[in-house]
Length: 234
Image (cartoon, rainbow, N blue to C red; front, side, top):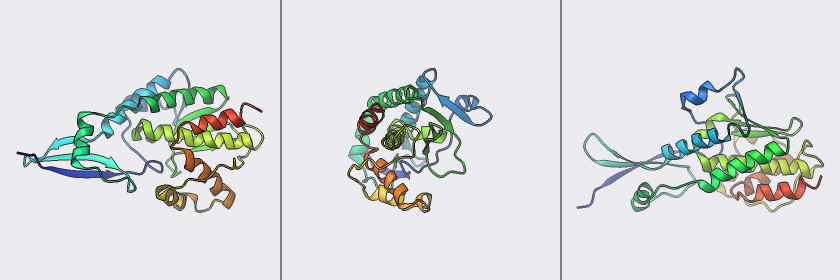
C-alpha cells in the first residue's frame, strides 16, 4: 500500500533574500562592526557553513501528529513544482554541491589575488544580498545569505565577479563599471527582481549593468572568463 505524502513548500527567493539562524559559533566570530574578512585562513570554515546549510535546505520527510507523512522543501515562486517521486528521489539521493563549493573557494582566492577584500556583513538596512564598491575594491555580502547554501552563494559571488569585470572594462579594477556589451538573457524571475523597489531609483545605465550581471550569474564560468579577459590585460 502506497504511503500518501503531504507536500509543503517554503517559498524563498534565491537572490534578494534575508535568512536567519546562523549558528552561534559563527556569531562569535563577528567583530564589533559585524564584518568578517574572507581570506585563505577562514575559507574552509565558510565552506563548512555552506555544507550545513545545504543539508538543512534539502527536502525532508516528516511524520505528523496523525502519523501521516509530509515532505517539506524550499522553492522560489519561479521554480517548477516538484512531484512526490522527484522529492523522494532527492531525499534518498541528496544533491552534492562540490562544483559550487569549489567555485566559492577558487573565487574568494581570486578576489584576494586581485586585491579585492570580501566581507560578510549585516545588511539590515540594505535589501540586497551583496554589492561591489569599486573605489574601495570591496565586496560586501550579507552574512545571512550563507543560510541559502552553496548554489546561491556561488551565484552571488559570480554576480559580483561580473561587476568587477565591468569595472575593469571601465579602465581599472577600481573604476566605475562600464557595460561589457554581452547579450542579455533575462528570465521572468530576474525581470521581477530588477523591477523591485531595490532597483527603483537606478539610472538606465545602472540597470543595464545589473542586467548583464543577472543574465550570466547562473553560468559559473562566465565571471572568471570576463575577469581574465578584462582585468588581467590592464
